[in-house]
Amino acid sequence: MNAPEQIVCKPTPWFTLRAGAMLAMFGVFSVLFYIDGTTGYRKKNLTYYTHASFQQASDTFAKMNSEGKLTPGEWKEFSEEQTVSLPKDKSVMPVDTEIPLPWPAILSDFEKMKPLQPHLLWQEYSAEKELNNDPPEHPFDAGKIGEQIIVFYICLGLTIIALFFLIRTMLRSIRADSEALTTVKEQRIPYTDMKTLDLRKWDTKGLALVEYDGASGSGKTRIDGLTYGGFKKENDEPAEQLMQKIRANFSGEIIEYTTLEEKVESDTTEETPAKPKN
Figure 1 (cartoon, rainbow, N blue to C red):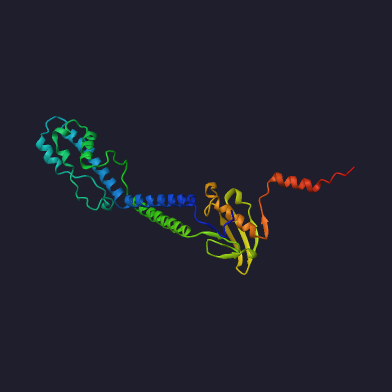
Figure 2: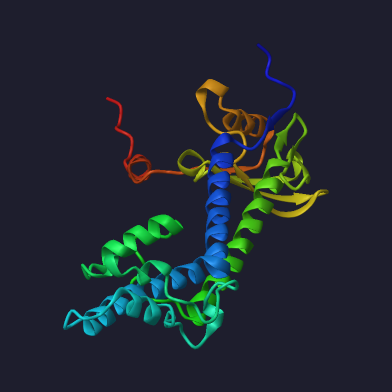
């Protein structure tokens, strides 16, 4: 079978998967930090301070009923006048938080308060209001909330960068025909302009470096076989085909990796005189 006139190496599934994973990761982080910075931490603060009122109510009930003379009416009248202790900086609370915030109605129930088990009351209340049964261990101040927004913008920037490189790479390719190599930047470099082909990292990392000087200009360009083409045998190793196409038309200096053993063997062969014939 004749070799194709032109070898085209497009982005590999390996690169697409890796870039897609990074894009998804940064995107998910952006969403999570945005939620925490705008509403999440404020809702957690509401849960924290509301939960604290249950312990406060239980302690107050125990003190008022220490002699067992507290009546349901007295407790109801007292509890309905109480409010949840909120921080001075109301910006750390949800924007729709009622100020002042009354104690939850369940804390006015005399019979439910008598066992002095605020954790059970909280479980009942949190299930009814669809709140987290395990409140945060500490509240979040304005500085901590602001940090989430800052990290959100950082992750958003990384998401945009990852998306940019993914789209840019997906639109690129490396091509080689019988006359020239066309790089990912659509620069066409004739083989006659190529001076050096560095293949020392080709077998290990799939990278090659071409140095050129001629009508196409002068400089260096990199061939990334892992990103473009790939080396899967079931796909006939497009990157390797590309390199073979280049080498078949290249007449400059080729630099290849030489192992230490090969170098020692080469030096030994050059230094050892030939055995005289009998």
